[in-house]
Amino acid sequence: MKTMVYQYIKEIIKNDVLYLTINREGKLNALNIDTLHELHHALTAGLTSSEVKGVIITGAGEKAFVAGADIGEFAQFDEQKGLKLAQEGQKKVFDLLYGAEKPVIAAINGFALGGGLELAMACHMRVASHMARMGLPEVSLGLIPGYGGTQRLTQLVGRGNAMEMILTGDMINAEKALQIGLINHVVPADEVISKAEELLARIALRSPRAVAAAIRAINASFAADVGGYAVEINEFSKCFGTSDFKEGVSAFLERRPPNFTAD
Image (cartoon, rainbow, N blue to C red):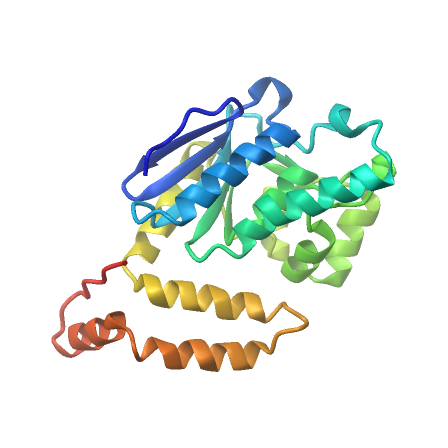
């Protein structure tokens, strides 16, 4: 995969990991429309590349992961423009992340607010600095979350916690976020990326086909129009027809580490 030079994000591939950094430090990495376009392009290429086994998303600098959307860009929007903003953003970035069949980890290095927290919640896992602060303050602007925040926050932390966070618009610290299940790990600020790398390295030892199947089955549990149990049964059965299954069983019986290969 050939990396590209973007205006608002940085992209590198190292040790089979695609690192995407929101690079608007002067704006606390706020998401504007061009940044979302660049994320869509980079993610589309990375998630289909054989060179990439996992993705880490973070923000430039030490203050913010993403401190929200670029409010000045949509301050004069009407209902139709707001509808297009939410629909395109969800489809091209947030749903793309959520449905990715390679593991994606948000390395939350600072403020994750509004669209920034929604970006992190669309990832499969979240690692946060002990200094990080998270929240969905949209009601303070006369809005509600528009990139899946009302749905994904509720899935992660439950109805009561989601109601409190969204209706008050208050921020919570990393320890509280860990307590309610919003994030997976809290680490010192200088260990956020390394912890995300550690998680991806452990996942990389497993069958990539089984990992993708597990992601599909887990996501199906939240899809109202899909039978999650049926998806699990189907994905489970298909695993028996893969070379990864044969290799995994052989390695187990031979008492050696498996050597999985990705097509």
